[in-house]
Length: 331
Image (cartoon, rainbow, N blue to C red; front, side):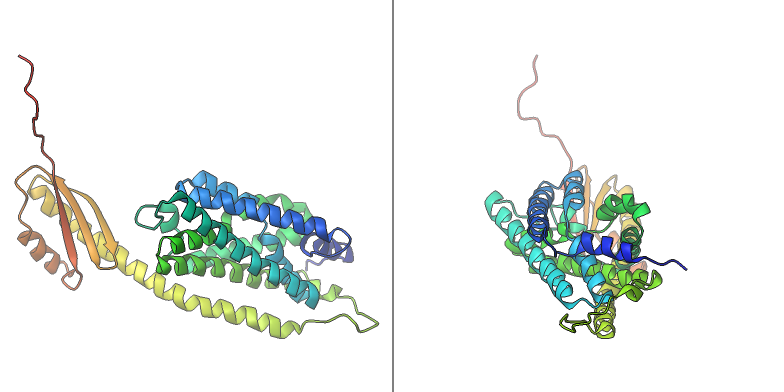
């Protein structure tokens, strides 16, 4: 079975805990990188730039206090546990605030309808939890084994921490509270997954056996089982909204597929073309384009009912595609 040495535990403490004579340097590094990554992520979301958002993921240092929380629980170190939790909470609040301010400055409404970066982060589901669990496990193993620490940049890209918080701030500023809550759920899901898989990996590597006893009894300890129970319970609670979201997404995907199939046949019969089929809160919207005259939608209505979509509100946006000459041609 794999195990860690006292030297490994000391290395992990040095990497994750904000303590010791260089604590000021560690804190300044954390806040500098976090604030810069918040600006980069917010700018990337506003500009709908995937490359910029990925850059923010690599720079963001939030994984450090999150894994520090895991180590604090495993080592029963209450002071460092509370310090890491505080850094995660205040850091998350700082990112949301920076994104909100940037949203005010740029005067550009940011929401899922006009921004793919937002749309990708407001409806987390169970597959996101699965990916977060696997990514958290890789990050914890890389922490326990210094010979595979070169995987950490990949972990930073795979786990989404700062970008969802940037989406929270930007969508709040745009007045889309529901989208902000969805992005916040994604962040909480990822944090909970890292904590849960981190505890499992630390147990496999038997890190808790390296806890040193304080002979003076002055060090405040953590009740390890209670802390573990809280993390597991939070993960189970999060699966509830993720399950409902997954069911809704699967249902919407199935409905969109059926509507697209029926609409394509209807449009082809009228020499029109379906440009898009989109699920919205008020139903499904079909955008179709083609030459005048506009096609009759009665046949589409009957075909949708026959396909079992009669219980869903479907709207059709007809966009005529024709050319009007406004200047005389040259003789």
